[in-house]
Figure: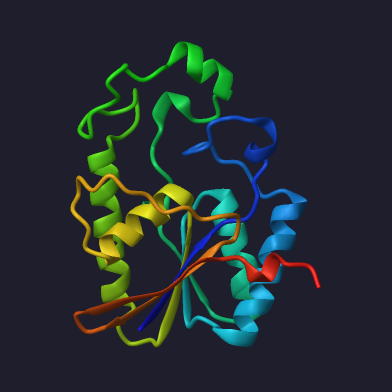
Length: 201
């Protein structure tokens, strides 16, 4: 099975300098154009049989553009949503720095953001939803998962079977795509953060 991990396009939150997370902002016009470019690339080179998507607007709008172009099934999955950042969602970054600053020694993995989730809970949510998606997609050759930077980083950790406490993260740009292959117990990371579709010709 091939697995495409895809981040949503540019959202309106990117333009107003707020913490996004669970704040539900739609795509910008540029974000829609990024998704359309990716859709054409998928349709030509690696069309998925099923697209699973986070239910937050910026991801679901991206996934809908992809599914419409490719002509495949679209599955909504709330557990693919971004990190639950509680009171930080939608808050201007300068306000967060002054009002909700982290402890000097950093937040422990088990400690939650106010009204949110801890890093450990986030990782476990990624493990559970990834396991579910793979189990329910076993009969197809290629799937796509449209989600968010933090969730995609945790899905990659799950795929690579990294320890829960591994202090690593993986960057994904707007509509960036990671290609994974799973053949039984063999896991292959083929490419990371591919954004070739955004290069103007």
